[in-house]
Length: 244
Length: 322
Image (tube, each protein chain N blue to C red):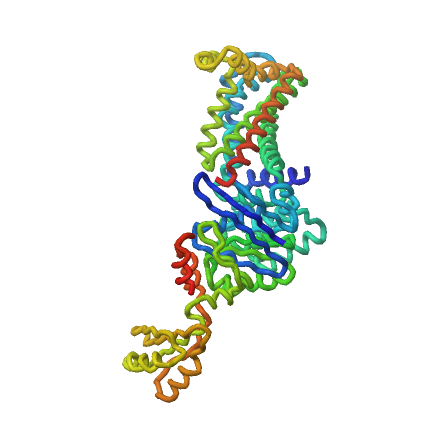
């Protein structure tokens, strides 16, 4: 645990020494605001809740989260520091989890900075604060799922752009796996049972119920399992090709 | 103690490291020599636990790298080739990170950090980010990182590559000072380094150990070992001198270098030629610039060993080594 914490702190600090952190947070906040107030019609809905805000998070994350995760391992590979990290007394697990948690903390900080939208809703009416809180938890969980996918994609390559594109593609599939755009394609090549299973793995379906303020333990477990699955995949990928 | 047993690494059909077995004990500074692509870095990486061997074992202080990697890595300091680090961090933060992960704490942490910062002269760049540093400073940061926890075993992959002569000298002095109670392995393709810091040298090529000896004993394998080199004021008297030297009983052969006005006399096996040649020089009143006894040329031995044809042509290799 101690080593995970040390890796986490180093990684999180490295976000903030480059302009990346500030550029990312700036665009995240601007886009979150635009989506909420223009596309979401926050004022027009005449309701003091944050569903216009949360509705667009999956799409916002689709392009912004890969920008956080793309450097995690690709940069270590490109600079060769992976050789240093892997020869320190740290297990592969500790390194993978520490780096993932750092990225998740960073996403959490960006998400927390959207609090003025909550304040606006509270100013204008009497929102259901419990539902909003659960919405935030759901959004954070979904960000974790995207980041875990991104961590694995970043471990596959030394090129950050490739890591970014791969992550967007896989996240897109994960997001829409219950929708015809993905299912129609899959049903042509895979047996029915697998297609049904894939349909159950859609981020969007899971997130929609949470964003309405309903936290089902199964949804919570779903996102934690997604994170666990992709982190295991990351460890396997790194173990096989860390020196490539 | 570092120990490797039948250490082998294959990449597909390419055998990078082929059945290496050796051990290194306290007080030894082992120079790991070989041409580029000989398998030096691959071996270092397996000892440091970065890559796993295809077969065989490596262990450090009794800890097998595959079975107890954390214990093995804890007692070892490792400088990877090219001294990679986190470029965006400042030198201070980077060294603190390493100290933390090496579980240094309290007064010991501070004392060790102060020591490496002082020893490697890093004070002027402490607050600078590593990516803005010169190659020499980066290499020193890499060395500081490797020794911050005062490891029993130190594995350095090309520690002086890219340093200027002054920096090379400093790094070698540092390595020499640390050697008394440590086991040190240095990989290099710079031969002067072996003479300067090592008390043992292993030469590898194509993943195999071709020689394992002290640097002096390796030099003695050179055909220049105990040869006498004479340099004249001008090349005019070379031909005459050659005939006189060649007639000495201890001399096996003579070579001339017209451009340098140099004559080299090679002895017959187990014979010395220096007294006879210097007596000849005095008697004939040669006009000399220098006269000296060759210890042997490591670069020549290195070439002879590493360029020898692979096993099967053993006879020819023996001739080249003679």
